[in-house]
Length: 75
Image (tube, rainbow, N blue to C red):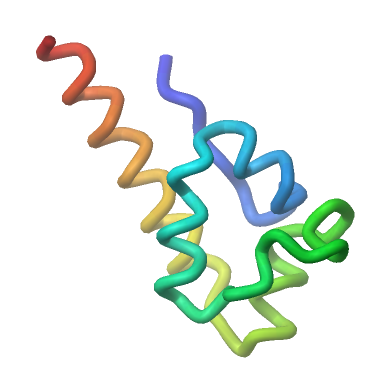
């Protein structure tokens, strides 16, 4: 089963699912994902602060997780 994230998840918890998600967040303008706020801030809250659509981030991250799962299943 593929782990999915949601916009109400805390950023630190999202990064525990897969640390490589950091790259997606950074590419979308969330350069401070390792700051203190990431320990208590949801994806949606962080997106709001940075002027980013949280639904787009969630879609990109869940697509990444699905693709990674499928690639690992092919091995």
